[in-house]
Image 1 (cartoon, helix red, strand yellow):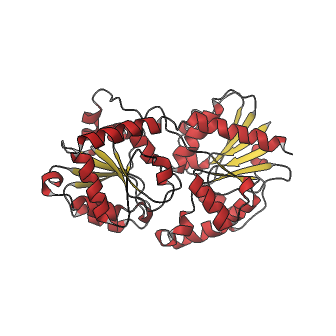
Image 2 (image 1 turned 45 degrees about the vertical axis):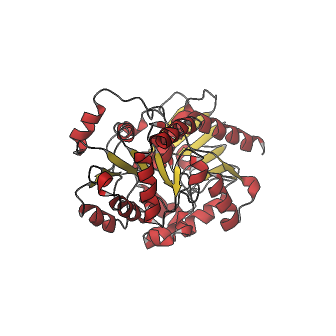
Image 3 (image 1 turned 90 degrees about the vertical axis):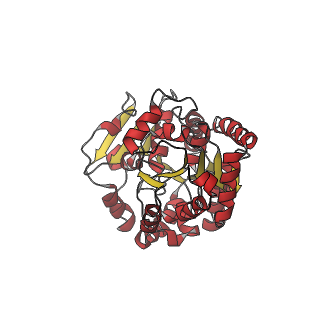
Length: 380
């Protein structure tokens, strides 16, 4: 069987869906099945070939397109040119897209699509208008064409059924995983390395991770942090690790008004586990998530978690986090105080978090994906 995979997000996005795609595809190719894989990516403007590492194997054909992902989106989804992906990959039995939209395919090619969340439906004002309009048109069309739709959580699956009217029989859940680099054991000198690279002060910190955009609700977190009593807040930092997304100027300005709040920018995988491990607690105030991978990564690294009790996050956290209302800053403040001061509660949350994170692995995700690929092709 020949399986095509759109690897563009893995190449062009460092966090979020990019990490999801890199980890899932690497795990899929490590399972030892006998299928042939045709992987393509739009790499226009990129000079490095490092993105091929981990996917170049004997049974894998890699094709790079000399156009950007934006141009590909224009051709396939804005202009809707019927150029089948098989012209790039060769004949396919099944094609998998892990990033919301499907390209045109030839008749007879089965299609699988991952829709990570419907945040553009639930929080349209949190998106740049042009991006929101694109998603509102391209995603429903792709969902309608897909033979199988994958969701990151039961909550997103429910959204697809209730909002887009997708038949329950064609929507499956594949939970993301946590990579082995995310663990509680510190590496030699890692905190000193963090201080040198990111200028982190030598005092305890509360951490949050995610791209700067309105849905991540960082203004709420900043307000909750500034409400901490002086006995705690005066000796504590708030660090936000995330690249600048869209509509984030207000968050940057709010952080700049406080000496003990830092926006670190994007933190790569070499340093992110150490950043989690060094945190006094991890706070995730997001208004809406299809899954919320940073929560599990923090748990795996032994950080106690305070998390929004919305969307898929209770499903992900189970009993391994303190859940708060993301619209009431006082809730976040109270939860942070409890985890910083109540040692027994803190230890319970850390222990539960380690156990919870251990149940989510990329190998398990990949095996589930492979089972569905084989099932959908046998159903011809």
